Length: 452
Image (cartoon, rainbow, N blue to C red; front, side):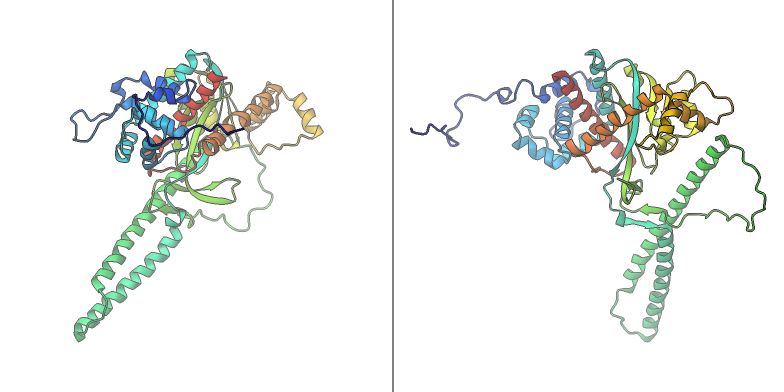
């Protein structure tokens, strides 16, 4: 039997005008993204009304382009520009126009407020189609996202001091060489003024780095002291024997504290299982446990989550009218002050672990859980009350939801969407990037829910 193969003809031009809608399936996510962005008013965008000679594109198209490319693992403005030529779906979004990478980058940088408004609009859309309830439980967590800077571009307080001493000695030696050359009227073969200027510039940068490290340490110490004053401290029996040595005074600045010259606002943070360090930012999200939609988000450069419970809960926008009943958080967020603030004025009930949770439950643990009652609170410290709350039947059932909801969100963002490091620098710019990432995630999640 003769083979009947389709004829592949790349030479004959198309006789009729092409309709790109025929090339994109009806149930494709791009249609959902375009419709979701369409309702955003022009006033929400930062536009160049005077014109600059460059082409100006519809802000709706530009935002749809960014969201779709973020959903499909493309974050660089140059890669997005290339996709406007090579990707049929992207050509459909742009209607066969081709914004260059500079236009894309500028739009992304200037329209943070529009991204926040679009984030709220997508959540309101989810509420209108009954995919997001108005009352619910949220779980929150943070993840370390690599900064656009190498940790090798950082210098510690101790190392900066050592380099300063070395550079000052070298400047003295160079000045002595210059004087000796002048007195003997002999050339040294070196550009001594240039070498001195280069070292003096480095000295200024190191001085600034040490000063900033010191300021950060003092701010952190002030927060710790303020928390100790408000924290409930259990009473301890006085020691029988006085200490043999007086307590050591705390160091003025820990020598390992660091400053990064490439992105000064990023920090060295523990990542993964805590056995390695990266130059990173701490990205926070609040997730609705029923729908797994992100309700709130922000980025901080604090290496730990200790101070993040209040700002993370408050990042849920008021416009969506979502009432939080319960807040689920791991032990990194627990502090008496933060929990009390969140629960004040009929606020949500917080279920925060007060220590590392063991996966194995002994028989005694099971007996304790059966006999545990949150109402028996007389004589207990605040931490003991929280531990008792987590051991109740309701507390255990709710806390199980935390790992099942917020941690898979980070898995989807990092593995499925491929976002593992920021492209921009500075806390404000990476905050804009995180707005776009969480917006793209919500679009993807809501589309999948509607398809199901």
